[in-house]
Every structure is written in C-alpha cells, then in structure tokens.
Length: 460
Image 1 (tube, rainbow, N blue to C red):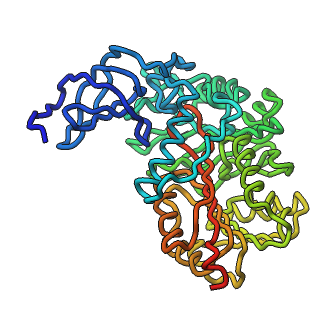
Image 2 (image 1 turned 60 degrees about the vertical axis):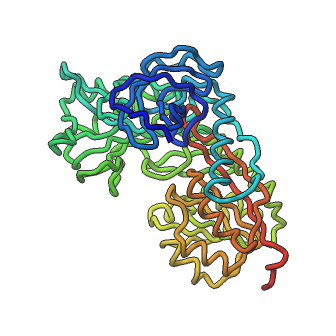
Image 3 (image 1 turned 180 degrees about the vertical axis):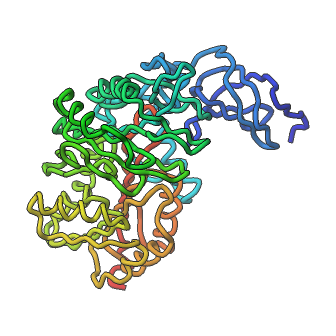
C-alpha cells in the first residue's frame, strides 16, 4: 500500500480504463481508484481530486490530454452542463459494449455466476429522439423569465431548454412555447426552498405509434386561474395534443407527481400502439420511455418462452399490463399483480379495450399476494422497481417452482443479488440474459434474465 497522501483539490494525471455503473469514467492513481465524470475509457486526463477517501477519490475533469477513440462531439449544445444525459460524449457502439460489460460484471461479482450467458445488447431503434415521456422542473431566471429544463449535474441549477435531443422531437415546440404562455398568464413558479409558488413541473407524453400527446402541469394546489381557457387554446394550437391535465403535489418532496390528476381539457389519456394492441396511457402511468425497444425485448421474451397456449402465467409488478396482455394471448390464463390501484384499474380497462378475457388483475404487494394465489404458475414474469424483489417473493418462487422465470430488471445489481438466491442449491439455471438499451446516452441498462427449473427439482 502506497503512503502517498491524497490531497483535496490536488491535480493529477489519470488514464481512464473503465466506466462505473453510474456512468463515470474509472482510472487508477497510485493503485487507488479515481472516478471522473464526463470521461471515456482511452482518455488521458488531468483531474482535480474532490471527496478524497483512503481507497478512492471522486474528481472533476480539468483537461483532456489525449482523447479516447470512443469520444465524440455531443449532439446537444448543453450536454456538458445538463444532467439529463451522461454519455452523449461516448460513441453509441461503445455505449452498448459498456452496458453489456456492466451486466456481466454485476452477475459475476454480485451474483457469483461464472461466464453468465449474456447476449449482445438489444440496440435502440434510435439513440436520439426515443423518449416518449419527459418531465421538466420549472424555474425563474435572474431576469424573471420562466424556465424549464433539467438540473445541472450535481446541482439544483436549472439548465433552460427549448428542445431536447433524446425526447420525441414532436414534443419540442410545446416545451419551447408553454413557458411563454405561463409567463403571460402570470402564474407563479414553485420555489422548493420556501415551499411557495404554484407550478412545479411540466409533463409531456406522446404515443409513439399514434402521435397523440398529453400535457400535464404539476401544481402545488388546484388554484390556477384561467387554466381551462389556456388548455383549450393549447388543444387548438397543437393538433396532436389530445389532453391537458393538472396533477396536484402539495408536499415538500423530490417526487414529481402527486396522487391526484384532473383532466381540464380534452381526454385524460392517450392511445399507444404496442405489440399489436392499443393501450390507454394516462399522464402519471408507468410506461417504459422507449416504446420500440420495449417491444423488441417483448419479442425476445415471447421467442425464448416458446409458449404453447396451455400455460398459466403470473406477471408480478404488472403495471398497466404492458407485458401481461401480449403474453396473455399466448397462454391459457394470465394473472397480473400490482400494488398501485390506479395501474390495475388501467390494466383492466386495457384488457377490455383489446378484448382479452383470459386475464385477471389483483391489487396488492406481490410479497403478500403471490403466496396466496392458490395457483401453481408455469411461468412467472418479474419486473420489479429498482430495489428488486422483496426477499419473500424470492422465497415464494423457490417453493412454487415455476418451470420458467423471466426477470426484467432496470438495475443489474439487484438483479444479480436476486438471481443468486433464486439459483441457490442449483434450483434454477440462467439460460440467457438479454440486455436492452432503453436509455441511450445514459449509463442505465435494462436486462431480461431467463431461468429454467433444474430437471432434478421438477415435481420435488
């Protein structure tokens, strides 16, 4: 171990050799790790040490001495400031390599799997313009102008945007012009430090397959004088805008949406085409932000499962039935479990809207419902939030022993943790892991892991 002292604020030279799971470049100095945002493996850089610890330090990029061959010029003029994207300076093919490595490393280091069968990353249909949903905090400039955009990296300094290259381009005119309308109306902008002001966020959502758009203002309370008339004007101005809503969030919180949403003009939801079905999606509904790549991952799931029509399927964490309903068309019966009552209500409506009758949905925590379903599923689909599955869910699955499990994850660390338990004592084997790029220009990676019950445990 070196005795060289690391000093806060010191300038050092570092060669970047890897990317962390949070998207920062990783280098080594005197056998200790240095994390450097905005860098690419292959960069040789000068950095300033901050937040120095005995084994590692965070740092800020000061100068690029030699750029990586994977470094490119960002397509966004504020990419170096805006916190919305981390990887616009990295060429897309290398982003895919880094994301696959992220999945492999998590499965090996956390899960303890040797040479896990990880496929090449499922490529996004487009690395830009893919997002079907965006939410922007509002702010006020030094000159009193209404702003909306994303926060600067590691700060609460708002970067004002009139367009965003990763959101669907059809949303850009609304982002640019609604701020001006709010300015003219004199509506106050929320100040989180003082918990004063009215308008907190702008929410935009588009049906990629239909072009229908929803506009939502997140407000501290319902008192927004003249909103109905302004909303009607917006519907006239933007031909594809089908609904304007208010969402009330009166809490001191970092959460964007509150629990109540009211439609003030048009309709409360848009139509989206997905997997040969038509879904009704509301402003605060969870629906994957990359419609096309989600559909491509679904096709992999359908192909891998090779459903024959006699199976019983359980979709845990089913949301509005995004994956449940397409899979229900290929099995004898499907059951969706979801803790959010509003999502289950929409899932039922979507099933009825598409004429799918062999599916039921239940409201409640998966760890409480799954052990008491009274059925033995052949296939279980897991798509939990980032924290992964509750341990009780994993233990219930080990008792039920479904023949196949598909675990769709947006955080590979918790995926690896849960797979390690599921596969313990040789109960299940990983047959395939399919990463998918739902979030180009960021370090986030989605992955679907396919598990098969060991022949030794069938019928046990």
